[in-house]
Amino acid sequence: MKTALAMPISLLCLLLTAAAHAETRALNKDLERTDETPAYRLHWPLKKTDSGWEAIVDRPDGTPYLRCRIVDPNARPMLADDNRRGPVTFYYDNGQVRQTGQYGDGGRLIGKARTYRNDGSLRDVRRYTPAGYRLIKAFNADGSVALESLPDKGVRTERQKRYREDGSLMRQTHVEPDDNGDPMEVARRYDRQGELTERQEIHKTVQFTETLTDGHVVERQTFSRPEAWSITERFDENGRLIKRDRRLLPDFVEDGEQIFTTRDGVRRVSHYRQGKKHGLETGKRGGTWLHRIRYRNDHPVGLGFDVDPESGEVTFTRYDDTGKYLSRYDVEADLITHDADGKPSLPDAWATVRRTLPAPGTTWLYQFNDRHPVRLRLQTVKNGVARYDVADGQSVREESVARYQPMDAAGGPMLRFPLHPGDRWEYETERVIHVPADDGARWQYRYRTHVVSRVTAVETIRVGAGTFKALRIRRGISWFKDRPSGEGARFDRIEKNDDGTVKGFTQELLWYAPKAGRVVLKTHVASGLANVLDRPAADQLTNVATWFTELVGLAGPGESPSPASPQYARAPQARWIGFPMQRNNTWEYLMQSHSPSE
Image 1 (cartoon, one colour):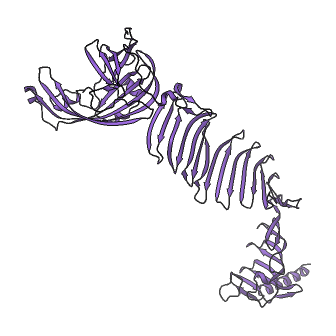
Image 2 (tube, helix red, strand yellow):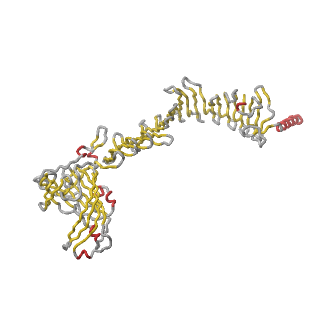
Image 3 (cartoon, helix red, strand yellow):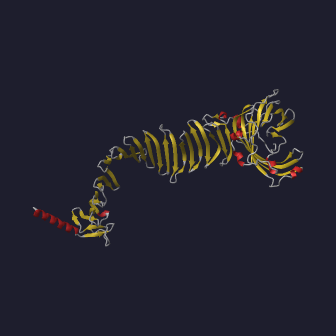
C-alpha cells in the first residue's frame, strides 16, 4: 500500500519541478518584453487554441496575474487590449480571481463580466458595451444583493436599485424623457423604514435635489450648468420658504434674491448683482414690517426704515443717490401711521412742521433748574417777529418766529422753520463775552462755536405743564474760549501757567411742541470730552450734570398759569464733566466755569 502511494507523489513532484523550470519571458510593468528585472513573466512558448493563442502572465513569485487569448503572437505590443480576444481572467496579488470576462472582435471587453473581492467572494456582475459598462448586480460581502439593474419599463430605462446590508432599499434610479424630450436622470433615496428622504432630477442643463423629512421638503438645491449658478432653498415644516441662497459659480458670489429667516421668525430678503447688494432689502415678521432700504451698487440709497421690535419705534434713515448718509430720525410708535401694505410712515402733520403761535396773551412758565419759574407772555406777532413780556414786565423779548431766537442774537438759527424730521443745519459764531466781577472789576474772553443741529425724533414728552407731542432737536456745540483779559488788580494776580485756552463740547436737546408753539423742555450738558455729543437722549434726562429749562405752566389769554411740579428741572449735582473741579487762580478755571448766554 505504501509503495502504491509513493509512485503518484513522485510523479507529482516531477511534474511540479518541470513546471517550475518551464520557459518564460520577462515583461515590464507595461507587459512588454524587457531585459531588465521583470515586473511580470509570460509563459513561453504560447499555446495555440481554436480561438487564438493562450497567454499566461504571472508575477515574479509565480502567482497568476493575467490569463487571456491573443490574435497575433507577433504583434507589438503583444498583450495590448486590441490584440486580445475571447475569455480573460485577472488576479489579485494573493492569487484570487479579480475579474473574469470576454474580449470581443474590437479588442474590448464585451458582454457580462464578473468581479470578485480578494477573499474570493463575488463583488458584482457587469455588462460591457462600446460606451463602457453598467452594473447588472452587485453583492455585499455576506452575499446579499447590494445593487440590481432592472429591465426597462415603458419610457423608464436604465432602472437600478441599491440596497443596504440589512436588505432595505436605499436608492433607486432610472432615466426618462423630460418635458423637452431630453433624457433626465431620476434618483430617489430612502431611509431604513422605507421613507423617501431625497429625490433628484438631472436634466440636460439643470439639476434639482430635494431633501425630505417626515414626507415634506426641507431643502432644495438647484444647479444650472450652462449659466453657472446654484440656488439653495430651505423650508419649514409647513412648506414655507425660510432661506434662499443664490450664488454665481465658480466663485460662489451672491446674485439675485437672497432670503434668510432668523430664529425669532424675521424673514430678511435682499437682492444682489454679481456679489454686490442691488435692489430692495426688507425684513418682516409675519405681516409686520421691521426693515426696508434700497441698495444700488452695494450702497444704500433713498429713505429706509428700521423698526424696534420691542418698542415699535421706527428709525428712518436717508441716503443720497451715491450712498452718502444724509439724516436719521426716530418716530415713536404711537405717532406712526401705516400704508395699505403695512409699511410704517410719518404722518403728514409731522412731515412738515410750521411754527404757529397761539393768540396774544398766552403765557408760558419756564423753570431753569431749581430756580423760580419765569413768566413769558406773548404780546404781539407781526411781520415774523414775536414780542414777549418777560418776568411780569421786567424786560421785553423780541423773537424771530422762523428762527426761534432773539432778533439781535448772533449766528443761528436756533430752530429753522419749517422743521422736517431729519433736517440738519450748522453755523459758527464768534463774539467777545464781557463778565462783571463782584467787586466791580470786569473781565472778558473770546467765545467761538461750531453748532450742528439735527431734528432727530418725533415723540411724546411729559413736562410739568402737561404731555406734548414734539420734535426732538439735538444741538452739538463745539466751543473754544481764549484771549482772556481783565481790568482790576485781582486779575493781575492770575497765574500764567498755560496759553489761556479752553476747549469743550455741549450737547443740547430741545423738544419743540407745535401745540405749545414753543420748546417745552431743553437739556444742556457741557464737557471737556467730545463723547458727550454722542450720548443718547435718555442719558441726558437722568445725568446729574444736566441743566434743564422746563415748561411748568401754560395758560391762554386772560388766564394766569400756576406752576406745576417739574418732571425734570432740578439743581444739577455736577456742573462740568471732563474739567478740573478744584478752584484755582487761572484764566482757564474762570473761563470753563462761566456759561455764556445765547
